Image 1 (spheres, one colour):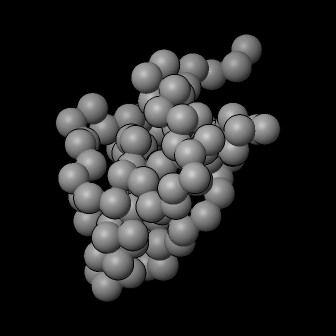
Image 2 (image 1 turned 120 degrees about the horizontal axis):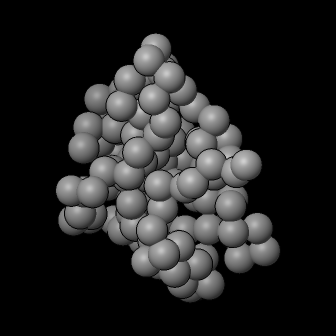
Length: 113
């Protein structure tokens, strides 16, 4: 049985709309995180041909946040010390474009929101 995704229907629609857009510096649609590990993702769009292939800022807690594509299925397999699944930060509201989050994360060595 496939595990439920933390993404809402609204998230999926926004990720797809951004993927279809000609713009390249969107505000993140959502923030996913592992509650018992140091991994965090700020996601802005999806690949329109592969909707589970997401784009954003990815921080696996290794001190080197990266900008790029990630598989939603791979995110869903991430577990920390307690074996807890990845969650969606329900309180996160993006207040700037992804490029600003990238600059802050690179300076700090991690996503700071």
